Length: 393
Ligand SMILES: Cc1cc2nc3c(=O)[nH]c(=O)nc-3n(C[C@H](O)[C@H](O)[C@H](O)COP(=O)(O)OP(=O)(O)OC[C@H]3O[C@@H](n4cnc5c(N)ncnc54)[C@H](O)[C@@H]3O)c2cc1C
Image (cartoon, rainbow, N blue to C red; front, side, top):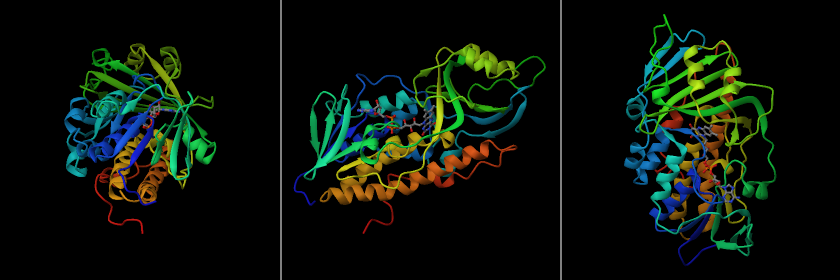
């Protein structure tokens, strides 16, 4: 369709992917509305690692300062033995990514990223309390439908509605997530409650400004400071054959954490005793889907490519998607179909590779001893804000 007026785009979901897309579109003067199911943008989620590839997008959106004020760059990456908490290795972290990949590697709270992106948008773009129940294309017009009976028309509807996307299900049917027999607890702890010593006779002070982790029997623990460094985010992976729901909001408890870590070092157990809210979440795996678009409805972020967290790239991919969508709609201002085609052609292969490498890394992590971490240079050097060298024919 060749058109004679600027596009009007409707995005379903004000997560970090949907809001990045809205920001990239607004930056280019393209009309956009975001419809979000929640009545307010709450503090859902926990710590998230913003790789150099994600930071490059924040820079291009003019949000680098806001990001840096709300994110942390750990000093060293430290590995600690699970039982006696002695030091296994320590490598410098701060400044390394900027030198190698052109942007820093930061750690932040998901809610802060969402807030920064939301605050940067003009008023009236994000509509809260809008539960989308589907989207279709009728006579070349994309139509999003809502639970209250409302319908909204647009040149394109973007399903950025997360891992349980109703739009993906409607376009391509129910998917078939496989439980990986791995679950993760997520929790946070104020830094002042992190012990400064591991225990009597042990040499390592527990790191306070560092990215650090333990690998032990049936699990691993990854910790990093977020925000201004006053809070420590903990990701506690655990092998289990007990099915756990794939959700960000299933509550767990200190006791469950402690029961699963009998015999681990006291410093870690002390940290578990100090956490307040504990959530648990089952890690599931899915194959990448080859096509994201039907008519004038397409997908973005977790809705398009739900990914295991092993490479910590799910959110970064949503951020990259959002920017590329803005860039391709701007580039093909005369032809929405070509714009959507260019968007998917650029994003599907990269995100599928991330999904498959996350799966491979997950399998490697469970080998004893684990092989070296798979190369991530191709992930971090990528700059989604730049036009690709080849365009679709
Ligand atoms: C424990 C954990 C740790 C993670 N760590 C990292 C990390 O370190 N680095 C990283 O890059 N990624 C990480 N991720 C993944 C990352 O959080 C997600 O990939 C990312 O949030 C996806 O963004 P999104 O915008 O696609 O979806 P979401 O952030 O899930 O947003 C979807 C939005 O759509 C809304 N919505 C849903 N359904 C509807 C509907 N029917 N109508 C209207 N609105 C709707 C939701 O309310 C939500 O606001 C982690 C995930 C988890 C669970």
